[in-house]
Image (tube, rainbow, N blue to C red):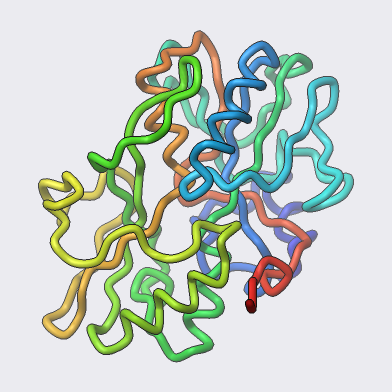
Amino acid sequence: MTPEEFRALSAAGKFELPTAGYCPGFVQANLAAFPKKYAADFKAFCKANPKPCPLLEVIGPETSLSKKLAPGADIRDVIPRYQIWRDGACAETVSNLKAIDTTDFVYFLLGCSFSFEEALIEAGIYLRHVDQKKNVAMYRTNIKLESVGIFAGNMVVSMRPIRRDQVEQASQITGMFPDVHGAPVHVGDPGKIGIVDINNPDYGEFVEIKEDELPVFWACGVTPQNVLRSAKLPFAITHAPGFMFVSDIKNKDYACTQ
């Protein structure tokens, strides 16, 4: 399935699965969208926190069409699931935004770790959530973010069990993709970053961590959703965790080989 075919299915309401493992080779992105009066501060927040919020494209106001990641794609219906936020809480999940007046909105597309999974798999590193067709496990942490205006809080991380003898290799490979979260932020004991129960992720689905594996944690683009809980904006929009925007850009185009 090509990214264009994927987006067409999403727009028609015919794709309802987490996007990990789909359209291999192409960059996937997280979404956060706000009225334009908050846009400058959120852009500055992303610049101050590039690890969890690597900014790939800004769209709007007055348009919802991508120019860079997927020229002509309407950001309002090409993601399988969106979340509508009111006063710091997720109020509902919808399949498109066409019924909502978003003329004044600015859309931010942020790098996603799904984009480096292809490189890990090609290197022979097993990813259980992809194999089992599950949504990646994501957790809130105690890792503080740089605050800008009303945007503040702690990082969200994604977790993948990696064989102990492959952790260094996984770190090196993902470090080549700084625009899609880069190298891990933590390896091993989840308690050291404030995760109380590894078996119960805050988002996504848990997968088994075997004896010869370590939990490896990467900064995650769901972080803005954690930030929204404290910002308590009257209205905001995000993707649903694990249900991403799929672009026309190749993962290799974001790889840094230096």
